[in-house]
Length: 329
Image (tube, rainbow, N blue to C red; front, top):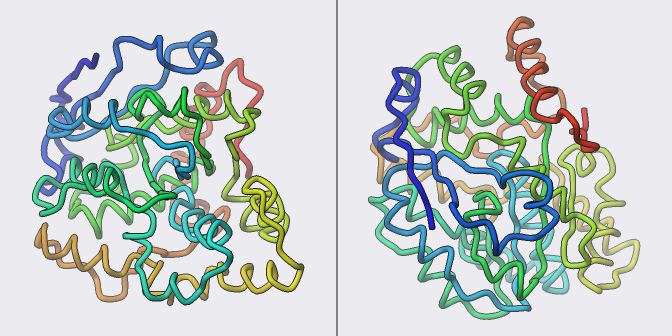
């Protein structure tokens, strides 16, 4: 069902970190269970994960999916947490009290987390399997590695895309402070261009979900759209869920989801995840670092060298060649 290609070149080794272990490319060998819109277009996206994922791949692929599930799927650092909090509140009648009392890590469980961090004491796949329904589930896995029942049971799926130029800068800081990467920025950015970093490549991951974006059970969003006009996104997401809220309710939710409020919301800003990662990895997380760091559109211009931006632009153009999809700027 899967093939695994160890990444043994010097650049791949340079971006490996102890908390995750050695990296491998993970490929699905039989694509017959995937949506026809993907398999007709090209081979579905593979991804880079850590070696221990091999012990869990079949369990994830065969996970039972329920029609009342809601899956939030993104590439890393593409508005995942933001989307999770938004969709959970909209789906639970704006229950802010419960959202405060129960951490987002438990309201919307990260399916493959225990595969990425082998030292984590809980089995997140089992936690998802035992969740009270309707379940909210988060994953960064590409379409080919997700449970095959997603394409037959057809639960609600929400995908959020983000321009790779901003993703890469955010992911670099994430890799430093959560995974313990201590190599150079230049090495990390070069490894992104060569698809050697965890969960890369991003572009085919996004294109697979874009190809099913017209399906009635799929809501395809853009990070940039959420930044520029969250109110319209809330209207669209409410309609997707079959919910009806007043303008005042949506305005209050928009304020709750603003970056300044979210970054100080300890139930949703992943401050608990930072503590967990520090405990498991021994990484000395900068006390000033926050999981929700900037949340800006175009912040790459402040952190990437012009030469690298040019190379990344060419990489994106090549990845989108022949496609109608475009990332928002």
